[in-house]
Length: 212
Image (cartoon, rainbow, N blue to C red; front, side):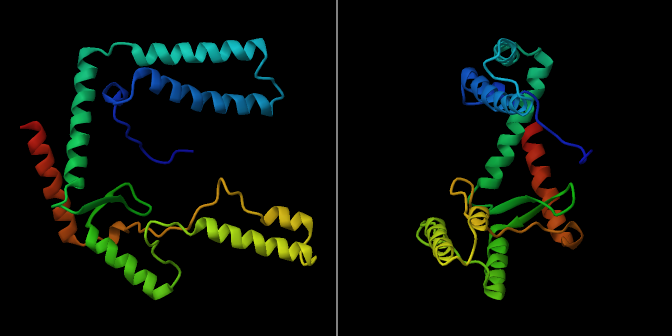
């Protein structure tokens, strides 16, 4: 099923701070894990000679692709996109700008807003709903919440208020559980015209710096 056009900057691994060996190993581990899962689902052992051959060929292919020299034209194109991306990041991260760039809800466009605006929205929403609270002093309450929840489940199980099956279904996985977090996805039809002008001015500045 198509989810709309995607844009991926070309050959950006050539400008990565990570070594080629590190990139190849990372890609290999990710892909081999998926292949391993498929083999297991089809009752094929990873120690099978054919499977071993596939994994060896995969690593060789990845190494070949990542170490191959790019044609000059493609390298220049990739370098331009890398520099442009870096300049946009530096401008967004600049302390004097305090600008946040976000995807919008159910749309392919982006919203440019101030960090103060987002912070005020978060404060207003938390005060209105009392559904969230700010994590203070960098201490995450997740571990304490999980511990209290497991203690409650243990008590319910001992008192036979729930069955062992229900207990197993409700017990949280400590490796996968995470705190709920608050975020906003702006709706493009509600974005004010002045924000659109800021967006145009911002990117016209970036492109002018880059190309001239």
